[in-house]
Each structure stands twice: as C-alpha cells, then as structure tokens.
Length: 287
Image (cartoon, rainbow, N blue to C red; front, side, top):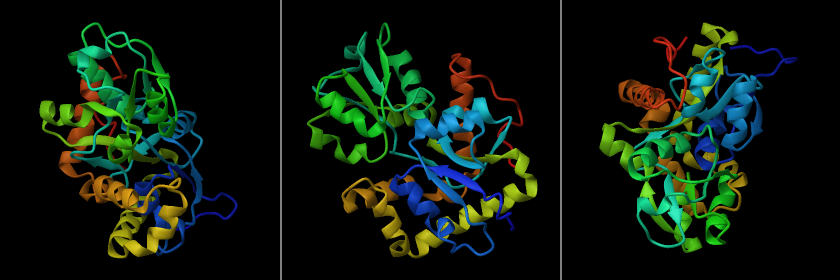
C-alpha cells in the first residue's frame, strides 16, 4: 500500500485504551506495507462531527452516526467496539428506578452517540413521560457533574463502568443489558469508517492493516503499553487493562455475521422509531 507523502492518510480516534491498543502498531509503523497515518485524537462527539463534515480519511465514530455519513464513508469490518456486557450505564447520586428519570436532566456524551441512541430506545420503553433536558458533556465530565448535582443523571461509557463507585454514584440502568435482553445481539458501540473516495482496493488494504494491528497488539500487549498509558488521561493501569479486555474482542478483528446483525438491528430499530434516517439495502456493504 502506498500513500503520497504530500497527502498523508489522516485518521482520528479517541485516546481511550481500546483505540490506542488497536492502532498502536499501525500508528508506529510496525504494520508491513501500511501507510504512516497522521493521527488526531478526539472525543467521540468530535469525531462524529468530523465524519459529518468529511474531515478525515479514517475515523472512529459512533455506530449511531452511520445513517448520516454512509454516502461518503464505508463501514470497515474491523477495528471498532462491539461486545457483550459492555453497554453504557445511567448513573445517579442515589439508588432509584427508571421512572425516577421522568422530567429530569440527563448528561450524555453526544447526541449522535450509540450510547444516546441506546438510551433513547430504553427510555421510550422504561421512563413514563420521558426524561427532561439532555445536556451534552465530554464523557470525562459526566460523573463529576452527577456527583456535584449539576445534572440529575449521567449516561456514561468506557472505563466509567469500572470507576463510577469512586464518585459515590449508583447504576440506575445498564443500556447494554436492556439491548441484549430485548434483541439477543451484541452491543454495537464504536465503528471504524473510511472515505469511499479512497477506492475499493484501498479500503480493503486499510481493513487488512487494521486487522494486522489488532493481532499484533494481542500477540505482544507490552508493545502497546507506553502508547496506551501515555494517552489514558492518568487512568489507573489496571483500569486501562480492564477497558481493553472489555472492548477489544473478536468483533474488533472482524464484525462477522453477529456483528453486522447487531449494527443492522440497532439502526433499523432506531429508524422505525424515527430516531435516525433509514439505511439503504446496501449501505453497510464493504468495498
């Protein structure tokens, strides 16, 4: 695979441990034949917006944003985050029930995030009368905002599953648990997309590079550790390891039949509720 030095391949993903673990080998030139990518680190709300504006060749985005970007971007069959037992949580200061959220203010990491889409599907079924104000905050600000009473509840993702007790918070509901119980499918969270204008051959090569990077990380986890911890925002190394163990799995290497079924299931269900535009029949096809 070749890439013009004048036009380096641009990629944007989060500084979270699962992303830095997955992309370490590629970002540091250890994947044979892969171009050296120009990396931008950004929170998921930022990368979702970048995708809608076409600002990078390759991006980690929320699956929920796909209906707005698949005309220009292709979903790559690897590198993303799906799984079981890894869904977003709704946190509150005091123990409670779903009905307690009626009319309340809830902080979310992005209005186009998969977490928020799962939350909306859950709330439609479980919160009579619906919630009140939705406030978008960077995900690392959500737990402090709930703790400090700035919002009534917060929708959290990633390592917050392991650390919310440190803030004295309680898990009101698990969006992933609700999704798995009602569908039997894994939870689709983060997707890797690439510009269709790169061409089918280049897209296949990029997918191969990402798969190789994932496998190299599994084969030698110690090699990625400096990169992971450098960008983990002072995260406890044990939490970083738990984060990687939860979000980097067989679906990261290849979506497979169950992975694609989960993505189609989420977006079809959301479209039926009027939450996202409907997908075309071939929208998820790769290269």
